[in-house]
Length: 172
Image 1 (cartoon, rainbow, N blue to C red):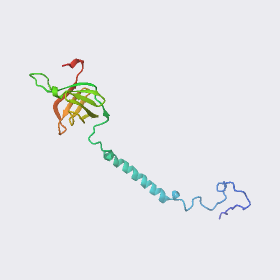
Image 2: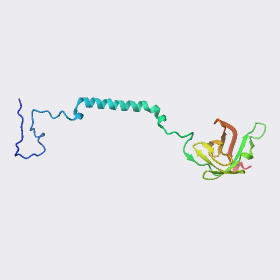
Image 3: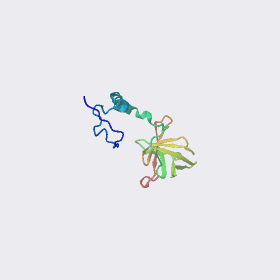
């Protein structure tokens, strides 16, 4: 049987007693710390597996964790300044579009528009435009391109009214 070495009370401690082999019969692990036990390691592996499973299974549910946007369609923006001429779709025998002057409006600056009846403001989020005040209050449009808008009905479906930004080649 191996003999245990002990320190004299008079000998100085250097901090390397266990490394120097002062105890030949005793194991280096002790009963107290949990991180050295197999039960702790088993529990740790179980928790790691649980976290991995939650991450994998939770991925399809990631949409549930998003904040509610209240029907907003994307980042907030503004329309290009200028006059928007509105028209109903025409037919093959006549004009391509029938101008509706009462629906025309102009974008002045920021989120401000003007009609013949007065001024108002709008909110553009992604492709959705909501007129929030003024004569067109409550009207909604979908932006199909930078200068082409389609009016939305109360049910959210596109109507036949379209508004096109006036540029040099489409002057009326």
